Image (tube, rainbow, N blue to C red; front, side, top):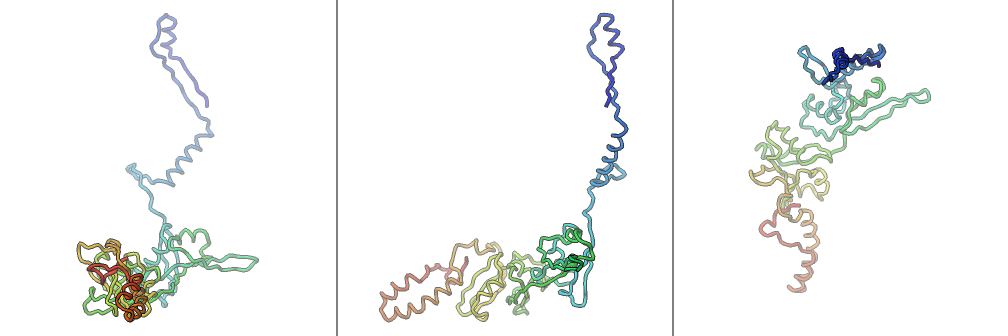
Length: 314
């Protein structure tokens, strides 16, 4: 870079006449070599074309998220359809893909937690093709994974997890219906189960308007479940499904929805187990007199729950 400095002629005339100038005018000109100019202009144009789009009015707009097509084999959902070609974004997760497939096939009553995606990748080793099946997490992005492999060497497939049937008495949703049996996963929460019930009846009500109770038929005790409880895991702890059931009820307005908002009380399983332990002790105490019965059962009996002895919350 060359910089030329030129003194103003007025300044030189004032100096010859003996007068002092108040200001000094400097005219500078800057010249760049011809090698730097194309590089600078090329870099600016590249930045503009990649990061922003200028309209005719001069305003800039952020470009839309790029999309691509993904072929997903869906024999697990529809045996009559081999695959489904979907247009997804690079930020679309596997859980989003499953939800979109259930909506397209009109299967909103199916539990999304039952399904997951796998990616079959073909790798070449010693001249032979080896295919490896990768189980994808719900947060994985199929479009990003597909970009790492050729389309002919990768394949996405919908598969199904193991689950179980959960019977819920839902006459509160429809008076003519006695109960509804749903196939759910072990990771399905209470809120997700209630949402599936609402989808079965095409109801637009909110999940927060309902609560699910675990009811013991022989004992007459019941427990309100928490929103993060998993009904299938609770059902697996039952000794007999005929003695327990899930009942869906409308939540009264102004009452807390979660059982944790209530005072701490005995759980249903704790009460039932202690009741079985107390039974032989009470039978032995009846033969020894009133004093022996009270002393031996004091260590195993639980504290009373005032006026709410028939309700249990954790």
